Amino acid sequence: MEKLNSLFLLMLFLSATAIAAFEANISNKEIAFPAPQPTSDQVKFMRECKSLMSAECGREIFSYLFQNVSVSLECCLDLVRMGWHCHSAFVETIFTMPQYKPNAFAGIARSYQIWDDCIIHFAPNA
Image (cartoon, rainbow, N blue to C red; front, side, top):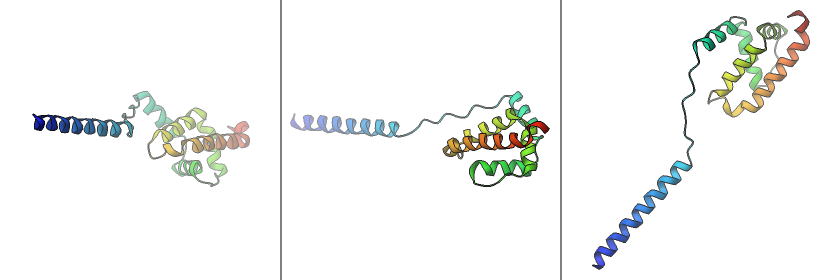
C-alpha cells in the first residue's frame, strides 16, 4: 500500500511538473500568424507605384529609412511624383516584414521626414 501511495505521489509530481513546464513554455513564446496575402488589386497598385520610381531611387530612399544618408534631388522629385499613397504603401509593406519590424518606429518617422523634405522642394513642380 505504501508503494502504491509513493507511486501515486511520484506520478502526480511528474504530471504537475510537466504541465507547469508546458505552460511556461507557451507563455514565453509569441504565437506567429502568417501575414495576410495581398489582394490582386493591392499587387497591381504596388506594381504601378514601382513603375513611377527608378530602382536606384528606390534603394536610395530605402537606405534613408535606416541610415543617415542623403537623398538626391532627382530621387526626391521621383518620390513626389510617385505620390503619398504609393510612398506610404511601400513604407507600410517594409515595416510589416519581420526583419524590419524592430526599426519601424524610427523608420516610419524618417519616411515622414523624407516626404516633407521632398515636398518642400518640389510640390509646385509635381
